[in-house]
Amino acid sequence: MTDALAARLAARTLELIDVPSESRSEAPLAAHVLQLLTAAGVPVRDGGDTCVLAGVTRRGERPLVLLAGHFDTVPAQGNIPGRIQDGVVHGLGAVDMKGSLAVMIELAIDRANGGGAQDGVDLGFVFFGREELPSAESALEPLLAREDGLRTADLAIVMEPTDTALQAGCLGNVNGTWTFTGRSGHSARPWLADNAIEHAARGIAALAGVAPVDHDFGGLTYTEVISVTTIAGGIADNVIPDEVRAHVNYRYPPGMTPDAAAARAHELCDPFGTLEITSNAPSGPVPLDNQLVERLRAAGDLRREPKQAWTPVAEFGAAGVDAVNFGPGAPPFAHTRDEHVAAADLARGYAVIDAFARGA
Image 1 (cartoon, rainbow, N blue to C red):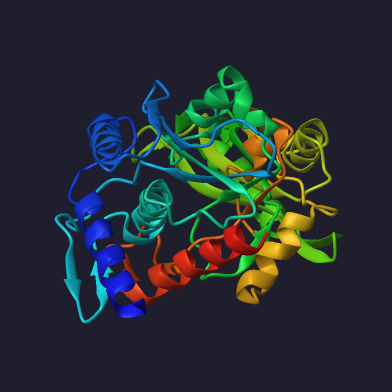
Image 2: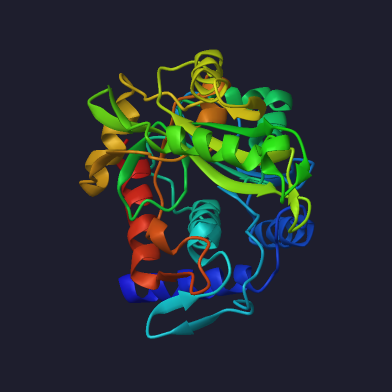
């Protein structure tokens, strides 16, 4: 049964990989999933804006648990179409997160065919687009705003790859443009100019000296970090530049508000240049008293870890829904040229959620 399930999940993952769905181009995959769920007899509907909703989407007599996954991938790196080799599915989005979408689809189909008759919860399935873009462009937040039934859920499981650990919360994510200004001039007479690159070098060196800070939240440790990720400047080989721009990325822990995070970023950057914050995605809260989270952990004897990244658990948290991260596949393979996920990991992810739903 396990081998057959693994093979079925691997085949479904490959099918999804071979429908390209880079961010902003998810419509064909959304239509494909809508069609195949409809053909399988799953209660499903078009949620609009490249979103698909299936299963139960409003709380009834039983607790409602949502499984959530995004359609989009990062740009291709010569890794589509995919392939299955030695029990491993290779291809664009294999681990982030078409393998998880395959698990969601097969769980939905099995329950539509009577497989969830003994479940202790109702399962809903939320497929959405544009997760790999800045959070302001995500299709999930508007979906949660217009679908009030989703906000009645007792728990959302965001099926990001976690290597089948249970990862709680997530970091907030600030992005900003850091501008250093000077005065242009001839490079033969630099004393008549004011080199913006030198201002940038001092600022970047100071920021590099800011040590990571660990924060305990709910018994888990989240690390606050700030980094420069890109830099651009210069006019010509013989010109002292008057402007340099760098991109700053700041990750902050659960419990810190977006306003406090913005203030901290300005505190670190403003002594050296002008910081313009371009996006600020809130951190995701850690569910502390939700018994369904513990039941999910117990269903697979899962490790409990912090999420040292941003994920859509923050969007569910902002909508008043407790959420955790759990999904098949190892995070280090996400976004790589050789992105892949083992069929056995897909079957393990399916089995944990199936056991959780039956025993919750």
